[in-house]
Length: 301
Ligand code: GUN
Image 1 (spheres, rainbow, N blue to C red):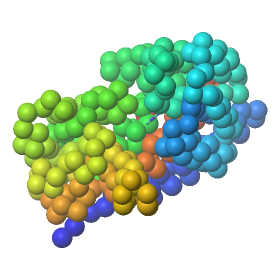
Image 2 (tube, rainbow, N blue to C red):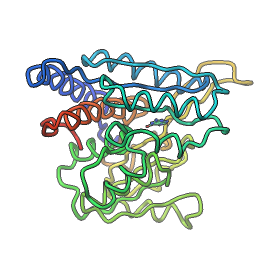
Image 3 (spheres, helix red, strand yellow):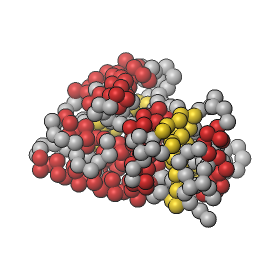
Image 4 (cartoon, helix red, strand yellow):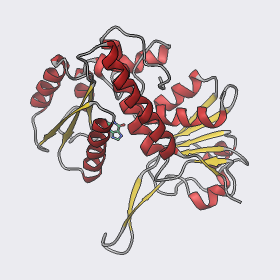
């Protein structure tokens, strides 16, 4: 018997439809305003190029303006900071995303914190992280927000559930734990130094895997009927010497996990599409706030 599949692709399609509707409605409220998202890519990381291309395509599809900046791998940090300054001042840009990882010679913290917090649609700046942590209105990181949305849709209330987040990155693990705490879960963050990880995972009603290692979480680490959110998007090449077809594989060993979990997100078609949909939702939210309007109705925050 296999667990129920949580259809991130379908939920993302619906959310992008809601965002597109919100963009059209905004024209009624403020004639001139079309929300704009600027995406900055440094260097030629093939995975990042794929993400940035699909972000640009889907931004246009919901009726927003897409601004794309591709900078050389060896761009000076000051030139990147200067571009961010320009985007901060550009009134047609409501959201700014700098694709990570950045090359090593660039201080990623300095770059992220140079983004105007009101346009920081990734929610990675110290300002937005702090606001989220103390319970103030913030822009919330897209991947954990997408995961939370799937959990809310699947469970309804998450209050009192035991949640285990495996991974402590600033992009996923830490904000995911903060969001689950906000939903009144009892939250454990596990990581590479955690002892007896399998036993800790087994106690989870909700297990979020964000470790970046293909098939790392085994089926017998999953408690009977638990809900599993697989954040991993690992590119694994079939065959030898990197020649052959590339497959996307999650952090959870899907086949064995299906026999234990109550519900699970597939890879691909789970977290990935929801991340981009939440980015578009955040851009519309940022645009509303910049105009002094209430947050758009029905979008995740
Ligand atoms: N790299 C991997 N995930 C993300 C993300 O959510 N935002 C940005 N900016 N870079 C990423």
